[in-house]
Image 1 (cartoon, each protein chain N blue to C red):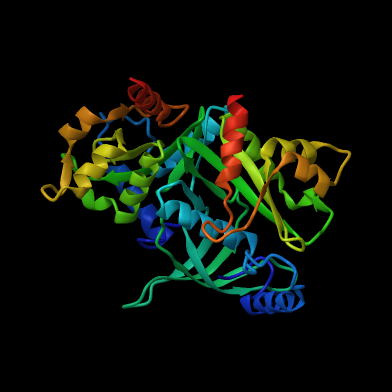
Image 2 (image 1 turned 180 degrees about the vertical axis):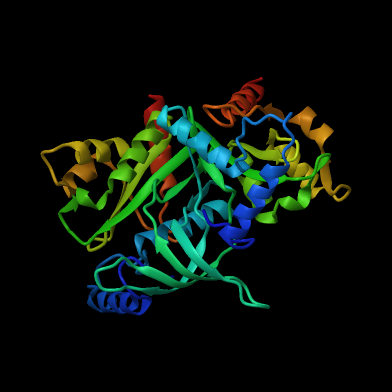
Length: 202
Length: 202
């Protein structure tokens, strides 16, 4: 795994190792030090293998400029650039429902800064909601090891509002479904999806 | 646009120019010489702007090995490789329905070779069908300038069957919805989706 937007893999591994060293013993270890993205990817793999849902992370969009075709070897991209995505990171299908979500982590312990969401993600979530998709944000408070599935409507309204720069943990607790990291799946987010579907029907 | 799997952009442009030169005058020009992919992308843009559906092409998955971070300039990918995709190229949401499809062209005039579909695409279409997605293949007979939306079930059955290596144009005509290229959208494939949804309800 390459953590391209922020630096080398080596630097990132160091960061994780340092974090582990500091973890107080009373904290729940069931997320096994994985990033939120890793937890979601593992959960998607589990859901896929069990025939429960088909959700994939979208590849990072890349603008390819130069490709070498060495003889007797596979093509090598020699010049390329990261492009701006036009969607969220995850989508898929579950029992006929279209799922669409973005995953975001914060080290903050009391609130979630809204600047973590980019305009294209907000617009995409709005567009998918207008087509009756099940849309939400997976919010990870990494320092607290607490994870939430927050309906996209809450994120969109807060992001567009001029009067706040973050959602407090208290607000998120009251509006979201909290997800308890487990073993299989790592992050059982379809429990939240089931609730969103039920809420919609009522 | 870079046509990375088959060669350089220059080579591809030459090919297109040559093709144009040969087009007999009696043929329908409404696809304006676009590839099937270009037609679908334009149609998706139209559907998105009009608030009709949200469908995007997935980026090509890339394994990034080396990234340079030049000072005062954006990151440059210096070594990367094409990875095998695990899904089809297109998915999205339309009136609450999950859409998933793969687009394939052939120059063949009488049948569509099934080897154009890769195993991972067939598996993914099966997985999405099992979750009640609206799944199909967009088949373009480029020499004939005829386009079809073929239900995924037909493709999967034919691909898995050991007794045939292609679907005949006649078989496709009888099982698919033919799409007439137009102006807006370029390829009005939601007409076929509407029919698939109606068929499912009956």
